[in-house]
Length: 544
Ligand code: G1P
Ligand code: ZN
Image (cartoon, rainbow, N blue to C red; front, side, top):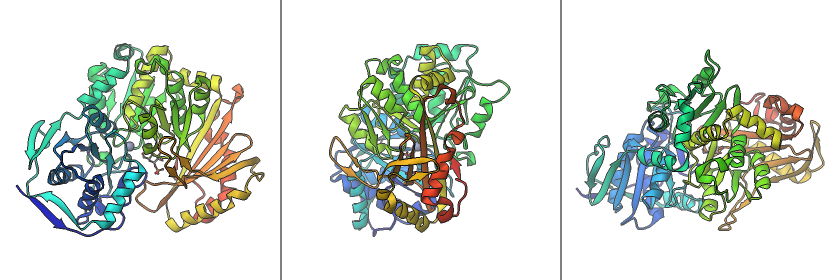
């Protein structure tokens, strides 16, 4: 079999966003589109000879085809060893785990995360480096630069290989290993948590839980870990079979999309604990009986109680959260006397802090929580952390949540998304608001006085890289905050995200509905940015 060189030319629209290159399947199916981007990854890496990679994805439509293309191109570019999940499957956290465990040079993960799948849906491709984490901006910029220069790509003149049989095959002179996508990840989880203690909780006749895999990648992982290794009752994991179109659903674990889980939580036999993950297994939503645990609170609670967990019993180095995430974790970090880092949106900013040993836990309001065990957010890890806390503290999730609010105060939080907005309108709104920031201090909006306002810029404390323009922040004198930013993961028009949070210490006011507690801030945001006026939208499309 011979290496063949295919002439091509640069294609527009290959700039990686918040999390790799995410486009519609239709766009990815254009001639050379996938190949150009993959070759650009290899070109950005430099000489690939002798390099080792992992390849796999969330099982969505186009995943299998893309995996075959990438394997041929990796071989043609001289990679010596490529591990690939059986069936071309790998969750994002499992890919990170495998890169680290086997000392690989990186990985190519195929996923558009929580975006819908299928021929009419989205596809995506991300490159992770040798630390197991998403490529930092310097690398994504180099990949993008390579997409603008590309004139050919390399592939092999060979048929698809059978990815459904575990084992080893060679492609050209590259060793391809088709591995169990679940085992290494499940072993890692068993090394972090007190599995016997969680097993006894799950075996208790009064503790019933449900995990909704949303027909996405975590089905096989959750079945192995929760049902097989920890002995949860059969049927604990629902929607466990990964489907190319996620069963027509939207694999985003929030109250709007995980409807079946929410219905079971409130059904005839209410459950003590519920959880869901997303398309590629890195997000999590956690529910206690009668309560939704906001991801911002979840990060704070995991940090405050980490000493219960074997892997974290020796203490945390520090905590990081993305800027729009509420400041609940800051209060815990202050009490623990450990540093708190505020980073831009996106997981790629946490990796440097972890590699430098400066943080142990991190999280984002967008249902992402993780630790230094890998370099990606990790949905099932968060679920196991919660189960270990419930078992270790002998308290239900709702009690843990309430006690946390009583001790630290509550950071009310909500995000409002305005989807598929015309890009020029969204940009005009942001530009107009940005221009007003310098004069905002002292202004009163719906009863809240502005203390400070800025366009968030982050200087990486490890390597000094500056990331500017990361979201417009309005900070109020009463401690409340509004953040405006445009999504970097959407594939249709622009998505405006508006994040709200306010702090409450009064024990009598800790149990309000967030939409009620934050209502005056919604009015302030509209008054300030003119959402209704400029976008013609009086209501957000999604509220989380
Ligand atoms: C969204 C989330 C962000 C997350 C990213 C990838 O990005 O807001 O926190 O890291 O998905 O899962 P956005 O669309 O806002 O750029
Ligand atoms: Zn995801």
